[in-house]
Image 1: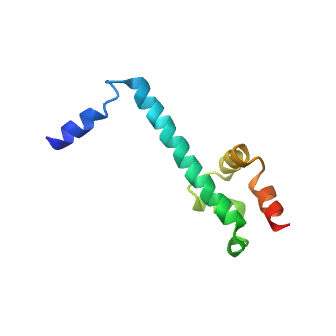
Image 2: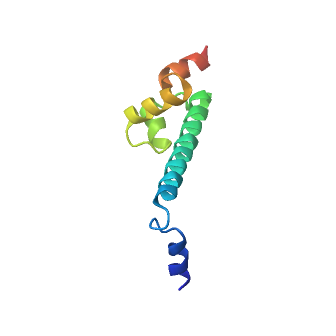
Length: 88
């Protein structure tokens, strides 16, 4: 019974627009968390040996190209360029 009451509280049928808005907000928060982790790894000299693809996978991105697009949109440069600028 408790499970039914819990799932009913999150039923998309009650307010589909609110449900979609919540899912979009959660997806943005997840991407932001992953991108901030990637930023930390790119700045940390201990991870200089990791390639961009490895950092992407370690941060939850299945495709390095998707990671690169998201990173560039968020930080204004590609992960490779960001790493080079931090090193100089």
